[in-house]
Image 1 (tube, one colour):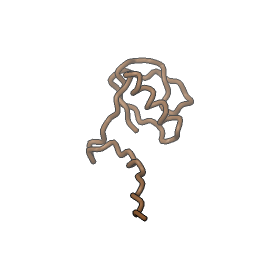
Image 2 (cartoon, helix red, strand yellow):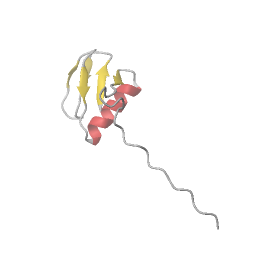
Image 3 (cartoon, helix red, strand yellow):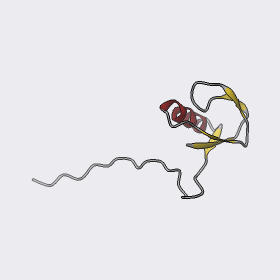
Image 4 (tube, one colour):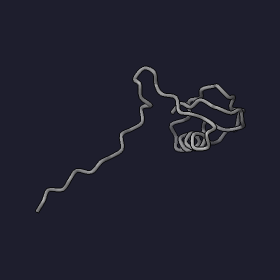
Length: 73
């Protein structure tokens, strides 16, 4: 997941190493759970926004699983 920071602040792109995240800079978060949780936290607190992939026009998020309707008895 790619994010663009809205604020300059100390933070992490991998959930382990702390660096200075600069406002206006795009960062690619790691695909590991820690990186994804950090990205979601930055977005939730309005410290960053998700960057949409320009090549496909999507964020390449996986589709949510769905259940098939059961047949009536």
